[in-house]
Length: 260
Image 1 (tube, one colour):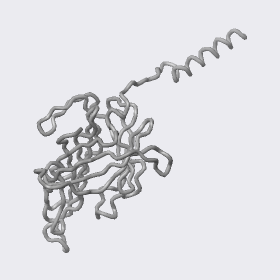
Image 2 (tube, rainbow, N blue to C red; image 1 turned 90 degrees about the vertical axis):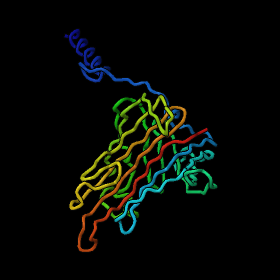
Image 3 (cartoon, rainbow, N blue to C red; image 1 turned 45 degrees about the vertical axis):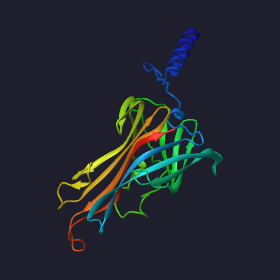
Image 4 (cartoon, one colour; image 1 turned 45 degrees about the horizontal axis):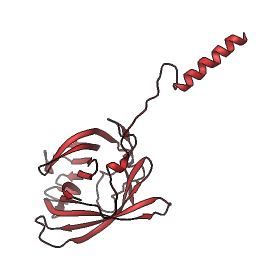
């Protein structure tokens, strides 16, 4: 009887080691996150920034283009004791003939298993370990309810806390502004479109409500963010107040031009 009990205990322990009989432990090996977000002080990336705005009470769609430069400042300790980096942002004309003008700051906080971006008191988990194909996480889990409510009167940001971020490509290639990049990591966020043309902010049927929520970040190893899209807008059809229909929201597209 004692022998049978020992055999039973051994079998149970074996099952625990493999997390349940018949199951095996998945292990991942991936590059450190720091390879995709280099944070050496003085490092910069310059982008073409295409910003979509809606004017004339939302009746006119305008795309404004700039050059935008992000520069890593020195390391500091945030309020919770974590090492963080302040990023300075500057803009100038698309031809690059004017002087750079300060356009605000944001913070990047790298941890052992994540990379967080904090801007306007909004905290996004942009990257996580492991870097693995189709790996998914809640990148907006620290956001409050309706985080953009103070800026935009729309419904797009309801439930943002539950949006999934997914590694849709972990060793890809991408050409941006005619230049090829390898070892590319693509993070796809939400892609929710109704009655709208996502690429040019047009509405398919102007008599029906429309909206776009689209998010994608692309990183190149050793360089950082090389391409980004973040689009959130809502369209309301003509009514007693607005006779032509109106859009509210924003669209941002960043494409790398150069870096050091």
